[in-house]
Amino acid sequence: MAPDASTAPARYVLHARIVLEQLQRLGITHIVWLPDTETGAMQAAFAAFPFTVVPVCREGEAIAIALGLWIGGKNPVVSMQNTGFFEQGDSLRGLALDLHLPLLLMIGYRGWRHGAPMEDSAAIYLEPLLRAWGIPYFLLERDEDVGVIAQAYRLAHTERRPVAVLIGSEYAPEASEAREA
Amino acid sequence: MMDPLAALRVLVPCRGTAVVIPTMTAARMWAAVSQRPELDLPLSGAMGKASSVGLGIALAQPQRRVIVLDGDGSLLMNLGSLVTIAHMRPPNLLHIVLENGVYLTSGGQPIPGRNLVDFAGLASAAGYAAAYTFDELAIWEAEARRIITEPGPVLVCLRVRIPPHLPQVRTRRTLEALPEVRAALAGA
Image (cartoon, rainbow over all chains, first blue to last red; front, side):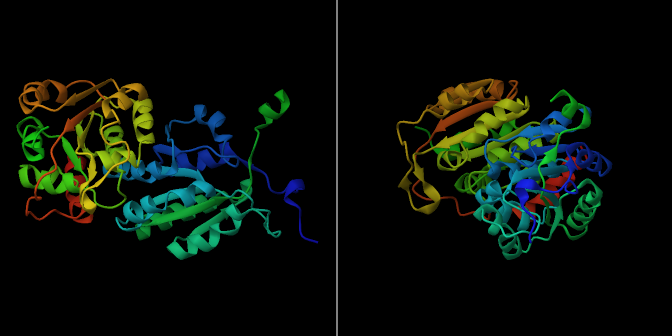
């Protein structure tokens, strides 16, 4: 029987702190984002890191801001949900793909069910669309696999192109937050 | 209403070392008057996103003045950027909007809200540090040098006529201009 995402097994535990530590090691300077269900818990974790956070009103702004930051010598990452990825297509085309922008894209994979059949169209269309754009992607579902972020980052910078990491699990609360809850 | 080329020429002697990001037909007109093309990044892809690219450069290079030359139709495609820019409060960003009431690039079709939208009002309401509207060249000329050094983000709406024709100049593609601008900023 396929696993049921509503009772996701404990092996799919992913913490925002682990992800942000990885981004810090990679020298990321700015996080341009629009929070979503999968990555929303990053907000609480930001305080412990030196990133400049740039919140946007709509995802199409994010790639453009990242382009400007990169032109100015900074090292941004963009974080958005798959729904927002669908919205921002022309920015991705005209400002990232056409201009060979080396960019790590973190995409909240709403509707991903850890390999079980998906029902949410936001999930169903995501990977086919990434393939259509020619954007390489990696799946991140648990802390143990956080190394895919570095793989994606290096690929983005080696090949001067956007590369995506799909966040397949909602960030779990930190131990201290869980105790308070 | 001002002649758009005359309105843009006002910026030429007072831009200093500012990076200028002109978009769509503003890029054609700016190419005809600019004397520092190595610091110009004409943006032709992703209509509407010049203000967001300008925000990114302004945040990355806080010591460098950044001037966005937007269009009214372009800004309407990315109105949320007014709020994002106001939130980040880059003091070095000057956001200029050429308001002619039409999509000039596609043949002059009227924009939504033509003669109704107050772009300076929108910027003020979004939280810009200051916002101005000019429709007389002499007044814009008298105020430009002060405004260009004013702490931003500042929006200036220039009400301009629809030109009978666009300047016949070669506009550099974004991909062509980008390495030069990036190198200039790296050497700053």
